[in-house]
Length: 250
Image (tube, rainbow, N blue to C red; front, side):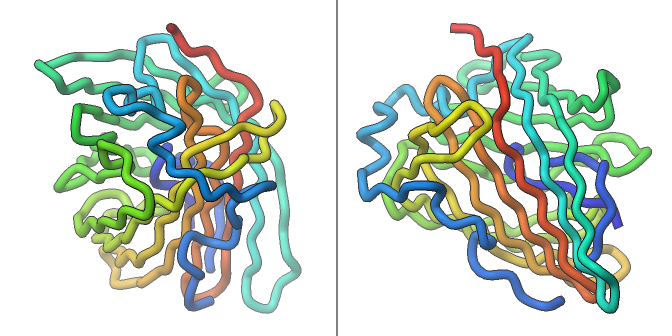
């Protein structure tokens, strides 16, 4: 099965194959980064400036070093590395709502496309294309961050769209904003707002999977680090993104 990531993005596109056992810990197994902090995230990003946690402007881009691991039942663990670029291709505004189309590039070629949104209430993932298909909307749009930023805030989302293995289906996710943390990236340590996501998804064929995600967002930069663990009958897969370079318009 193809691995996609939520939240940055994030989705890590339909680039990597993996299947997965039975239950992932909340937020995956990535921990809070190199150094956990107890600081209230509102001290890191001021009210009214929350959109800087994932700044959408045409031409903005983020390049990540990617580590992929998978363990299939009865087989040796497999590991590979790659590099992905997330690039804002276009931006459209409707009042206070910003809609951004992102392309995901590998080796200079676009492999995937996603649609994101942001307003005074939060940042959302709105659509993603499955392998070889057209954009499929998340219904309702999937919240990634809630504004204003509140330490220890928890929220949930139930909806339909493209699941983390690149198939149509339904998802049930719970989110927690767990303070701040220093994220380990290819550019060094970055102080970030820290999010955890956990839940399950059911593909259209009835297959059920478990998802855990850790994500770190740096004000004025965007996503700094992301770790996703998927468990589904037959094995386990993990994808870790570490920011390598970025271009963000001020």
